[in-house]
Image (cartoon, rainbow, N blue to C red; front, side):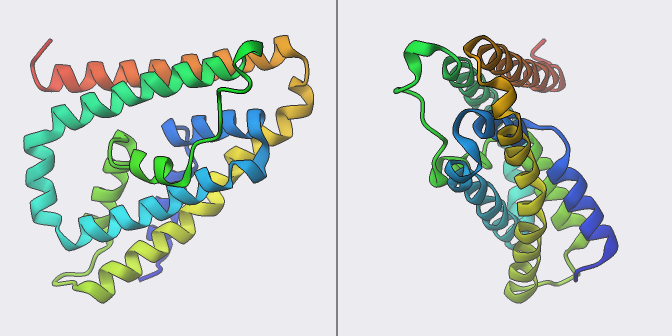
Length: 202
């Protein structure tokens, strides 16, 4: 099942900018790579579990997404706005004790409301799952996706940690967190606009 197209697709979807990677860059800057490990593992293992469940229940998931797409998108975008605020707070001197890295469970759960994760998981299952696949094939695909995803997202946390020494001054750290928070909020706003337009609400 490990083919070049699967490797390319999952790698590209994992390494390109998105909510997970923006959060990881900010986490690397604010907490370092080691303290970001639960966040990293939560994303990759959560992604693998999501692939497994979607691969096994593809028909039901497609119906669910069609019926609940707008609500899932609203929840995901709302959570992204909240995370943007948390990233912004991470740069405030008075908030140092209050802000902590995202937990393993928090990162794993976020995949279920992350619009980019849904696109990636559904496309992966549709494109790369063999016909009449059962548990073994779905489990193999899920494991491969998690393994390919992990080193790709590690780059973002490592990049963030690499920037730490350049952002040691409070102003520079605050500016970086502001940019990351702004990008995340802009991503959420764009996704929300896209979904509301698609649903003909706007």
